[in-house]
Image (cartoon, rainbow, N blue to C red; front, side, top):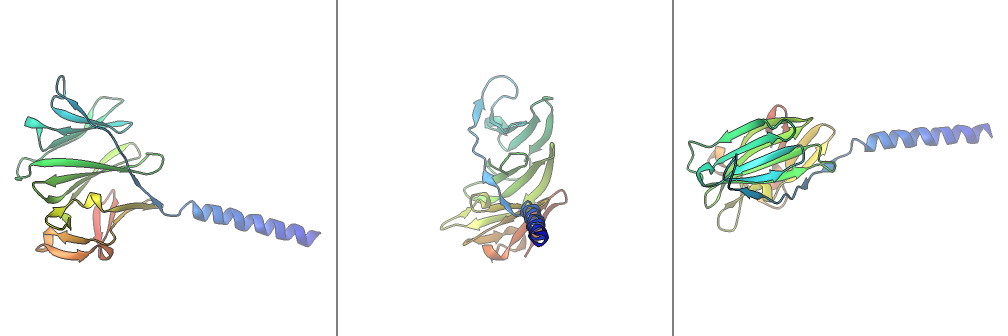
Length: 198
């Protein structure tokens, strides 16, 4: 009887260790589908409004084209403001990803003309908005370069957020338009910015 009790205790100990280990497993972010609302009157005027829960993402149109802002919904304060004043880009196209409980939101804003030039990347985590930097990459399409946000896989393992690709060719604009197999490139996204591992 004592042996059976020991085995039962051992089983539950192993079970608890497995549960704790699994809690650190990789989880995949999902696209966060948010319907934009064009605000043509009031302040801010001529922006598309995306409600992200605790924050509002404003994406400029018309005279505010190539501008985006992030507003803390509770305080009303603009906590991040971006304006592209030097490039020849024509449009900014946002895409949002989140973990299951939406406590972490990754914002990828494509900078584009007829084709994709790259992404401005912002991470909302622990009630803080962090600008991570610019990703000077695109996916090699059939005719033109396309947004990496349409092809990337965003995952999280413990506190690290990873951006990877499968079955695509990635163009590295910062390296003489070098073509890289998607499986051969990986990005770590975090408070230290964007780190390319390849």
